[in-house]
Length: 506
Image (cartoon, rainbow, N blue to C red; front, top):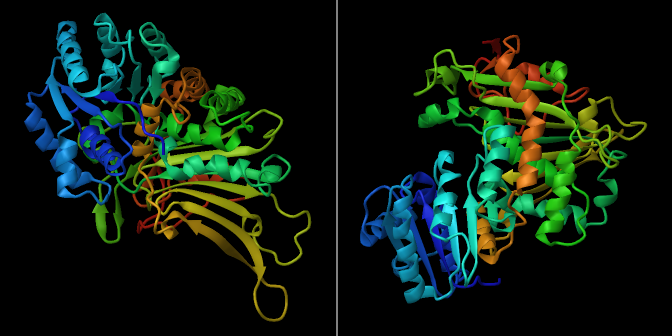
């Protein structure tokens, strides 16, 4: 693979969890594969007081604890640690950014001699408009030599108005082609493989439309609760945390038209057109097409699991949704009349993210009286875990008669024993270094996604008659969500684990 130019990566929030668990281990894996520049530096920035050596020791410990299973030796880890530096500042004080400017000049002169800087905002969203402004005051947003890029973690805004405001504020200091709004789901290998599955195989693309597809289903399930993140989650919820960004981005790749090229602008133009084609939701129908739920206490495999309202930092009367399911349409020539169903939730039976393409039944089903969804072909694209692709089709059972059973034709990335499956952050960090923004969200697409979600947010926040359905931890969510799909069922990769599968109204 192509190696990036010499550069310095500046990580704001370097003492935080994301840096320790994801960013530094991902950089270590890139280093082991010889995919980082020949000369590079990583400058950690946060309020906590560390020396360069203290920061290196902390990050080396994180690599050993959270590394992705790379074959790095002790010597390689220590050599990588030599590229790590640290600068303590008060990120809210504009004067402190002089220290960053001076440190970068020093490191650039001694290490890279390129003037190429990437600034990664692994910070609370409240700093997303502050840090770019203070960098610009020190003329670090644009340079006479080299390039400057800014990576921003989600959430990019909390609603449509805040997303528009944030875009305007950041664009005062950085151009759109300098901005990389990261969505780590787009860095997953199977999500990227959607483009290859669709556009390199003559057997799929002719069928990828309203004439042959009955409905599309996307699920992102987690088996864990909110844990110690109750305070954060109270101000987020499943709609903002997962559905607005991760799931809609996957919808964009599933539904997009073939791009004119693999250029990032061409691909992102097509996903934007999908978002612009979402059928607007009238507020009077939202009750029937958008279901929200919240996990309640339940016994799972003999262990009592507490409900969301009993979690640390959660309001005992909270209406925050830990489950969201949505039915909607894309009004264009390819998808007219095809319903899309997306759902996400915490404390479900398993951790799984997958896309399911449900093809239409044959016009006249000859062989059995099975339920409609059992008689249909399905293409299942598993994002995580056990990444791969599975095609379901009917085969005759041996013996007399025509008894038909669904069988699977599947491929798993784990079958490729000699190929390493990169982590999402590994791929996305390398892309940002190479200047490839294909798998990053563009500002206009972010705004369109918020525009689509806005009516749901408004109804859920202001209409007291909209119910929050309780679902026992360890089940597949509230039963009313099952009613979204007409004449079929959600795909359940595994059964309910809770002893009591009944839902309630909170």
